[in-house]
Length: 169
Ligand SMILES: Cc1cc2nc3c(=O)[nH]c(=O)nc-3n(C[C@H](O)[C@H](O)[C@H](O)COP(=O)(O)O)c2cc1C
Image (cartoon, rainbow, N blue to C red):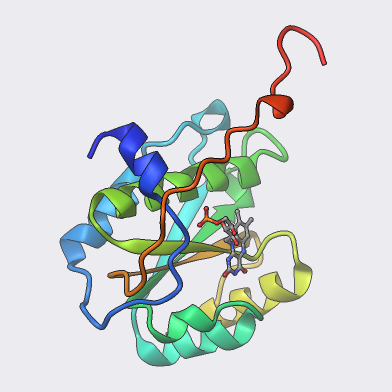
């Protein structure tokens, strides 16, 4: 699968089979995440990998729209460490880029994934930080649920020329 195919095939998957991911697959995803561009190359993200069923259940309780963690094999929580931020205010963008690389790499590996927003909703951030025992300077950006897909989604076409402006608005 080439890059454009992965971009086209990636869809949010919310139902997973019980086939586990390999450690090698997880490391492939994390390697993809760490190859993204970041502001001043500060690479201020950290990644918490959760596979323990009890921990996945706790995360499910910490987030109101995370029911799919009940069938996910794995969750990666993308976090921003504000102590390493050298360009103030850029950490969410840097974490978003890392997230998208994980989603695309997962698609390439034949895995399903969904981005569960945590930042900037304070209640979710506090609840997720508590479950994971994050230091106060480390902010949870999102939860990525991962597993082998147990649902199929058709390709979509969202290209809208009305949203494109050339030269000026
Ligand atoms: C910032 C953000 C937050 C999201 N939060 C959730 C969520 O809490 N629960 C969920 O099931 N999907 C969540 N999604 C996935 C979106 O619902 C999904 O991307 C959107 O419906 C488009 O569908 P697609 O990903 O299949 O193209 C989120 C996506 C983004 C980018």
